[in-house]
Amino acid sequence: MTTLIVTIIAGKNLKDEDMGAGKNDAYVEVYVDDDYKQRTKTINDSNNPKWNDQMDFNLNGNERHLHLHVYDQDTGSDDSIGSAQIDLQEIRQGGYNKWVPIHDHGFGRLGKDGQVHVKAHIN
Image (cartoon, rainbow, N blue to C red; front, side, top):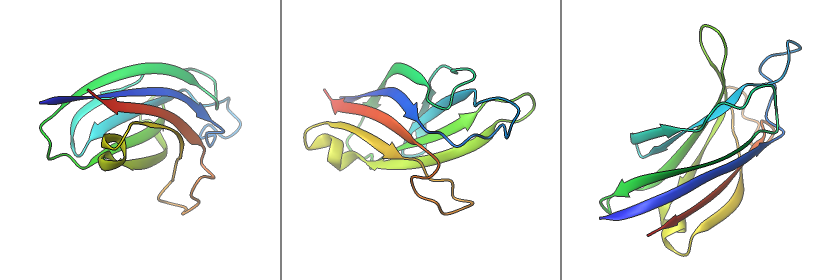
């Protein structure tokens, strides 16, 4: 068994879901395929949050994708800012250190909803 080590570093220009009522209270949920969900801490009142949160995922070798879903935490239900998917094969071939465009599937504006800086490698 191997370990996937993911660090969610920061967000940049995240789409403001609070529409004039302040800035996002942003966090990221991270999945490997549909399992192993973890999340960052919430950074309040920022569309450019700095998380620097590291997560470890045990892999059995069959997993294919790392999924990121960015949310604005609100009273009641949280608003989706957008999501992204990273192919684990790219991480397996030497690590990963990129700004990933976030895509809000409701509007089809790739990269217009912000970016998340992700570092990842496999031990």
